[in-house]
Image (cartoon, rainbow, N blue to C red; front, side, top):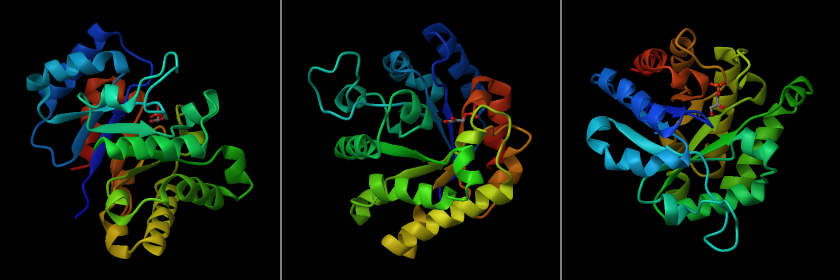
Length: 250
Ligand code: 13P
């Protein structure tokens, strides 16, 4: 059976103090969950969360982004080597990075290579805009994002990738994709992996959904055969709600 994953993307929210409190509030409520729980806080929290691993034993930590160069004159950027002591995962290609920071498939591909070299599992985001869906080019678009960023990888590397399907029109809008819409795209993504690699590899890769996922819609989404959990934004900032989402994946 594929690993179910519930990842919280805190985005640019919480001071360090607030982050420590939120992490603790989530950690104390996690029971014997079978889903892998990942929290991706701001970079400023990573060292402190790592120092306090004992209080969140069942939660793994990820970063929200990394630089596409190994080191050098890139003011304000954070390299993969810098986050490596603190994280097992790193989100790459989030639509907010693509649109507000002009990230291209090329730079996302470079980040993925650097992460894999440092034994960090990329959580690779893909997904279409509302206009692309309305124009019925959403499958093409997602296929092109995946092919450009991932299809240079060999079999053992692709198996390290977690794919997050995040339709842009569903992010932070309250308009979640229906379970049928999400399942359709997840099955399509899995079929792309099967075609390029093998169905054995496609069956092993966790494909998670992101976009207005909350405690009310999580169970139906996660019940779909190709939806292996969620990448949660707003609802991961409320401990009670995030716990309910984690429980919905069990
Ligand atoms: P929301 O859950 O707030 O819609 O955000 C989803 C997301 O972008 C997670 O990466």
